[in-house]
Length: 258
Length: 287
Image (cartoon, rainbow over all chains, first blue to last red; front, side, top):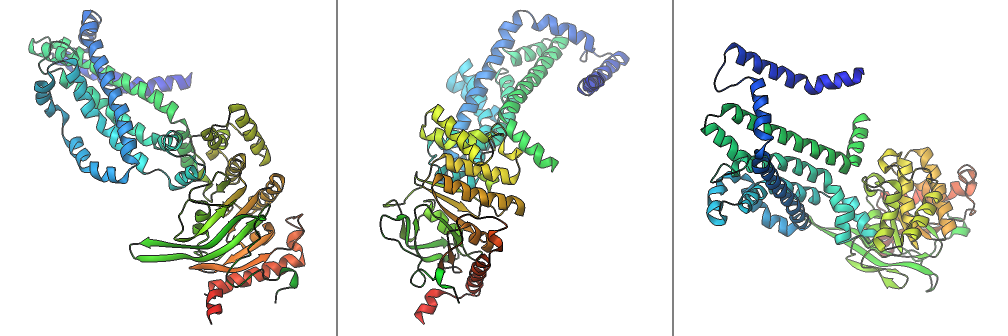
């Protein structure tokens, strides 16, 4: 009971305080641009649990999901191939660093011209931005494979694809997961930004439209949807990460304890 | 100086060679030169010796004497600059199926994401051994090393000595003819070490495999081996090849208190001291 209470306190304490402060500020000095939290909450349910759920929210989430999954798969596959090959690493490293440093949103205008204002373009820009942390972390994780583990694999005749499957990938998993953790918010950002250009649907589009039509509580409620979405993605990620890296966390806990 | 029963076996700077048919593993004129930025470094100059069937041979030498280099060449993990390693009549060019290696760094050699039984099973799984056969081999191997009770633990949850037992179980489940061990007990405490030494002797005798055991510990080499090959300092040649004529039944207390054990230990110790001081049998021969 005590434990449950303290968990509740730690988890919801700060959000409750922040909402209270917001409420206090909007009560003391009401402003058209900053509606009180109660109003945002009511608008939140009215706005998003209707046709907009199907027209704006779910398509956005779908594009985000597809884009991020493609980015992860491609990032890991290319990362393993590059990470295992020293020449390929030297060859690709400067280019990869260039693309990673390039802010992906600037590619939206040219891609709009090239691909057109459709789902494919939006997914493409998510992949293009989200792939780099996965790819570069995978390269690094694979490259740093433990030399004794490598020799163990070799001496037991584990090579080629089997070595990737049984040794290289699991060994690089902590680093790969770190890359995936970074790629998720990037994907979410690009999901929103890609919907702010030349489109008629999606979360990003809806928020911009609310702002332009001075539907201020709706605008705020859209931002709330995005925040909750990002939080949900992080929770799902943490669930999978805990399962995939159970051994790693156990090992680290033990090392820290000693 | 040396009592007759263990007279030096062969010509200077070479180890014992055996007639064909008795040999399991031959090392012939093995040389390894590393190419480094600072120029070539000759780690191993010229090593020749044979490993017979059903033997436990210890390789002992001063630190930096190329023991690990030699072992990796034998294991097919390093390509010698010249000379060759022959296992069962075939030149070793890559890690052979009939060989298993136990590394010193058990913590890095066992895969931390696999449980104990899975670690032991992995090489068999990779070879496509059927599942029920695998289960039997894994259970037997774990039983052999006294770890039948922890198959579901992760290796890092176990003590150092137990982890090295897992590595030994993995090696014997692979059913090798030759087991190579590279200073396997250098990182465990003395008590555990004594237990593991007896374990190696027991397992070797039961399974009838040959073991090549690299160590820097002189006592260990005499206690464990049927034979001790002493290496010179680098660039390495064979300093001496010595038969250990102690009774087959070894006991940490009894054997170590035998006068003969002390004599052999004394002799090996002297040889290693000479090697450390730079005495080289090949130079002695040249003079």
